[in-house]
Every structure is written in structure tokens, then in C-alpha cells.
Length: 239
Image 1: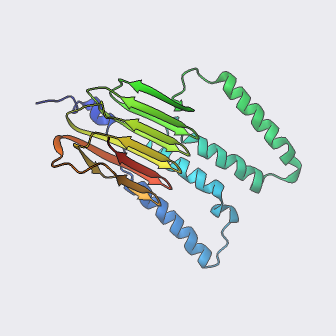
Image 2 (image 1 turned 45 degrees about the vertical axis):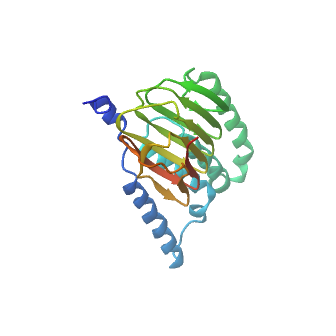
């Protein structure tokens, strides 16, 4: 029996937190706020702002990542910056706001660690890594996975695009890929005979398997899709 995909390390790494409770909490909060507004209760105007949407998306993705440093911090930072400027800073302080922000960004660029796993630009790279861990924020990345012991992965895609080519990859057993997509798109290219089970949740987004129909799926290769697609799309293709 092949046990490559059942080791404790791989099982822990490839088993993301369930997204249903988090999605349920988000819907409850949104519904409660809308209900309060319909009842003419005093709901702050900024609750319905685009800045709060960004902050909410960042918190959702961060919660699924156990709030480990990553791309989810970017939408929170952007939403917080503009929310502070528009709603909470007095007029006498606003002319200092953006110079301070620009100085802060410059200091970060100078002092940040050399290794930064956030993906930028739109580069193509071949990878023999068994596990894919990628965060894309306001950019794009193309990855071609060629390992024959693929173990799954995690993809965070916020306001960006991710192309993941698994046509040359291989595995045996059951693996999991966790997707957090918000205001962006992910293209997943896999062999047509892989058995894909979609357990991801789409919230005002779509998950579409566009592979050609084959006679029978390979039940020795089960790829489970988990995560959340919000205001974006996950396309599964083959060639």
C-alpha cells in the first residue's frame, strides 16, 4: 500500500480548516446588519463601504490561515487606510496622512526580509515542490508543477490571477488543494482522468470544470478542492 499521502505531516498540512462555519458567520453578520438597517436602527454608514468589504475578505482568508503572515494582510491594510482617511481623520490631519503612508511603505521596502513568499508580477516557473503554497495579491503568477509525488497545496488569490499547470504532475491516493479566491481568477490545468471532488464554496463566484469527458475517472488519484471563491472564478481545464 502506498502511504506517501497519509503521513501525519502531509495530513496536517493538506487538511485546511472547514470554510462552512466561517462562511456561515459572515452571512449571519451581513444579514444582521441589513436587518438592523431595515429596522431603521442607527447603523454607521461606513459599515456598508467598499473598505469594509476589503477588510472582511482579508479577515476571512486570514482566519483560514490561522492568521499566519501572508497576502490576506494586504486587503486589510488597504481597507483600513482608506477607511481611516475617509471616516475617522479630521480635516486638520488629512494632509499629513498620505506622506506618512508613503514613508511607511518606503521603510518596509528597505527593512523587509529578503525572502517574501507573496507572488508578484506575472512570471512562469517550473517547480518540483511536492506542496504548492502561493499567495497572489494585485498581481499574477504562473506555475508548472512537474513533481511525481504531488501532495496538494494552498492558493490565496486576491485581486490577481493564478495559472497552475499540473499536466506533468502525478500522485497516488487522495490529496487536497485549498483555494481562497476573492476578486480574481484561478485556472487549474489537470489531466482529464484525475478524479476531482469539489467541496469548495462559491459566494457570488463560480467553480467550473471545463475538462473533456473521459470514460472513467482514475479512482487512485482523487483531488479534493476545498476553500472559498468570492467575487471570482476557479476554472478547471485540461489539454
